[in-house]
Image 1 (tube, helix red, strand yellow):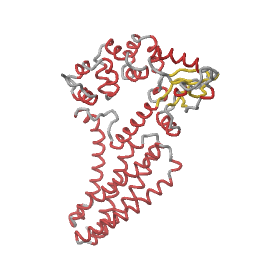
Image 2: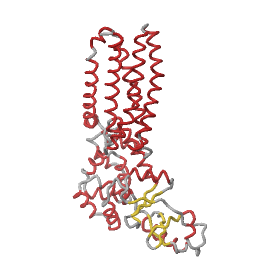
Image 3: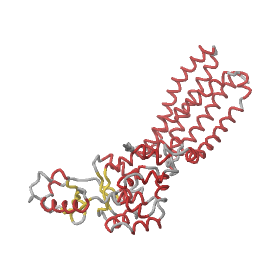
Image 4: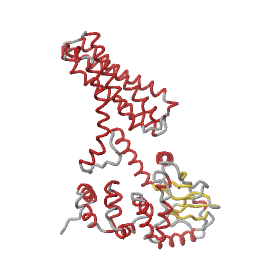
Amino acid sequence: MVKKKTESELLYELTSHSRQRLSAFKEIPINQRGFILLALSKRVRVAILTKLKDNEIVNLLHYLDPDEVTDLLQNLETHHQNNLIKKLNANIREKVEFLLRFDPKTAAGIMSLDYIEITNDLIFESVSKIIQKHESRTGKFPTLLVVSDGFLVGELSGHVLPTAKPNEKINKYVRRVPTVRYNQNENEIIKIFKKHPHNKIVVLDEDSSILGVIYSDDILTLIQKQSTNNLYNLAGVHEEEDVLDPAWVKVKYRYGWLIINLATAFLAAFIVSLFQNTISAFVLLAVYMPIVAGMGGNAATQTLAVVVRGLALKEIEWGTGKKVIINEVIAGGVNGIINGIIVAIIAVFWNKSPLLGFVTGIAMIFNLIVAGFFGAIVPLIMKKLGKDPAASATIFITTATDVLGFLAFLGLASIMIGK
């Protein structure tokens, strides 16, 4: 008996073995293929879709909701999308064509059309008949959005249906539901969801008519995706890189960032080269140089993470960032004093050099102040300029802490110890 493969095993096989990818995909039951495609990285998803025949794609799309069909078709060229849409059944085709009109990174691009509108003057018996008709057609229990004169009033929860009287009006059971405009971006959707912890958000058009519904599982996926992208940005990794990608793909996505970092490393090396005579005269300086630079980099990363989070949650902006910068500089100074005293004591007792301890301690304080300042101000500037603060800030902050840290450490050593 052949052991059934788990989803993670299938994803690994499809991502890692490009030669057997298509044949392995076709071994997956037809009703599971669409869901497996949605779980794959965009690169692998496109590689599979472009090798499948149109009828094979249409057959697997049959098992997906219109919003999931739209997510897959958005990976293909427009002419290929149009050819496939023509082959979908009329009900699905109409919904997919509607969803494809919107930017996939806006509320309308994320929404589902799995809902029905009912008026607030209906009785529960009428609502039950509407639900039965919908379920017989789609096989799903719908979200019940209550409207008056075409405008949203709220939602009728399914759990009240069994206990309500058939001839009772629904209006007193309607509850409010959060809304979002169709063109609002992912960050705004997440912010609304956090303010109103509800299982769904209704998407409205410019005239306040209902366009669709965003469900909590889609928003949670969005939050997870945003968190992952923030982590990737901080590390200088391309958002499309996947953990299972082959080595050549990883090189393709990473080499550019590493070359930029190499340039900044040479800048730091140039600063060090200016003090060759000082280092030659007192070799122990070379031992403590990485400590000063490394501590500055770590402190700057802490500040950067806090400020980027504050910017993402709209807790701070350029106009209100002054206090944040001051607080981070003070925190950097205090942490610099604490760590500076520790490293000075080690230098005194381990290397028998009070002068080395003094120089290292002062340099440590200075570099952690630099880390606090640049870790706070650089992401604020990047945000002000319309750049991604997580992706753009890292390289500038690292350069500042390395260059200014070495300059302070070796410059002070050159003055105190002599060339």
